[in-house]
Image (cartoon, rainbow, N blue to C red; front, side, top):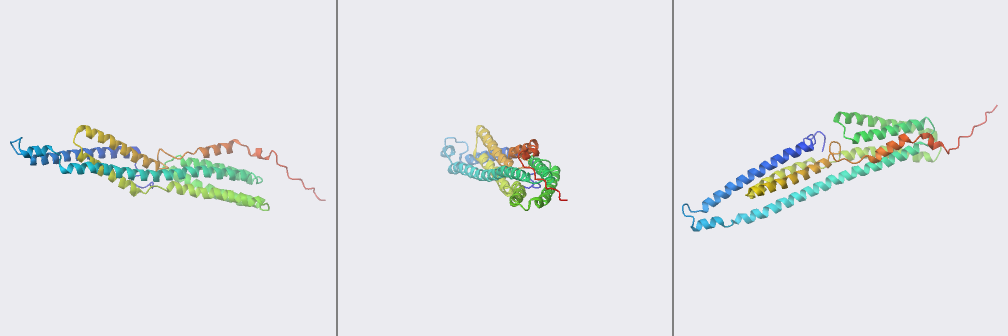
Length: 299
């Protein structure tokens, strides 16, 4: 769901509480209406002033509509479970895609960081610092900042990407005579490509129309169930069932909110990468490198 959409702008907890109250109210209204209709039906079949009349006995027997009503509830609940299951599968599929992209991007950045150590200074130091900044920026974006902070960090993200490519072009000139230069450029390209993939993955949601239809269906189902039940105990049981349905729907919505929801893809691979890049000295990569031979000065 887009940030500007009505559903996405409402916190999941508040939306769930409001929906649960409305569902309980519709169940109560349905039960009261069903009880009134059933009372009128029995009154119509009862002979006034003669409790032993044949009509009075007919009032105590099952009405033909009772069988139909008994079949409607399983059908309504079965279809509701089917819709919730399909929507849950869609949301989880997008969640797994986002989580997989985190690990893929961490691997790509780590490879690019190692490839950067081939460059001579100052290109190596500049590009290494940019990759570290980029990793921290990606972690901050995934932590669910406010919309204002998110816009600022997205702008910083785009600027870092431009700086990384500029530093790559500058560093490429120093190693373009070597075969490894193409591999180095490819590793940087992979980082840039995954930047777009992760942004696109976080914008891929279950269509909002699906959630609206689910909400409408839950409300209609609550009214139908209330219309069929007759006792106070049945009403309490229906409240428990409605609570479970609303909780399931809110869980799906929460999974589908990568920026504002409580269930988010783990950023542990990116955090471990950032810690590794900061703790490992770039000088450690040079401990076995042979220094370039000093050319004799011609006289």
